[in-house]
Amino acid sequence: DATMVEKKSQQTRLWCKGAVLGYKRGKTNQYNTTSLIKIDGVDERSSVDFYLGKRLAYIYKAKREIDGSKYRVIWGKVCRAHGNSGVVRAKFRKNLPPKAIGGRVRVMLYPSRV
Image (cartoon, rainbow, N blue to C red):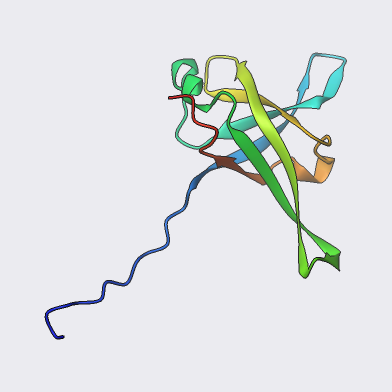
């Protein structure tokens, strides 16, 4: 039927972009268990509230294939805010490796607290 026009659906990204800034640290000590993440579009402490508890995925590529994929994931979650400029503290199941600093993380929009 010519009246039915097929729409090409654009793929929608169901996660927000984030960047790894480094580890939580003081002047002398560094705490590798907690990573600092900058989420795109979050610029003040008040807007961090929506992201608390959200899952994070650090995706990286490895040499050896496992289950047909060379990509691997380290999962984490947003714990709390860090400072007043929208940076968050996050804990990952395994601590992020140093090569992750400056890299991308995916901020999943679940679990929902609304």
